[in-house]
Length: 351
Image 1 (cartoon, rainbow, N blue to C red):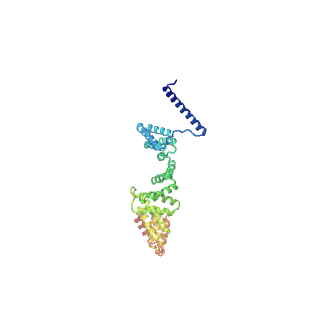
Image 2: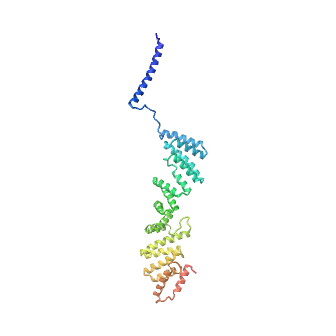
């Protein structure tokens, strides 16, 4: 006969066995019905919770590894182990970039490039180090590759700083098409008193391409600001040569349009900034021509004389015009012309 204590023990054993049996039946039934057994949900690797947890781990690496190279190696290893943690990988990349920047500052561009490429291989979707990669290629004098990366960065996020960087790269690469693209962005957004050198570069390219309208536009803008003063940091003789060139182009345009008074005014500026060179000779010649075209034959004599005594490309033609005008005024003779020529030499300081 089973006593009460034995009954209770037996009931417990039966209950346990029944529970196990029911569990097996339920599991088997689920399999038979094609229903997966319930599984524990995983925390998304890019969730706020995991990002906070991963950030702590990354901060710990930075705090522990005081040697820059060991810190970079540890951050790279962490990124390789957590490829799906996009946000945390970007956080690690920022610390990694600090080490790369130090390597660049030390002048080792090749090592910096190798480090960047190693991290990019571990995290191909991460773009944190791309701007550093552009700098590294520039430091390594691989300007074409630096420009290629810069183009992608600009396309993704246009900025004046990147446009300026690309302009400088394409000047170095002597790529006029791209100089025009990024130079025009600069002069559009930067006042001409700060971007005058870019405007002059654009003018030069447009002159070479026979786009006189654009060239004259840029020259006019620069001379409007700096026609009567020298930009800060520029030597006056060098700027005088720039002004002589710019005013020569503007004067030639006015002469072509038969705006003779304006052409004379502009050519006189040329003679002030370049009193004895080729540009001065041309300027004096066309001052003479403009006055002649304007029916001031006597007024044309002096500038033709100055063009002649300078002995440059236009001098022979100037002498021919001078002789013809003098003869017309002096009964077909050249009597007295020597004195005019002597005065022209004296005025120009020619011995």
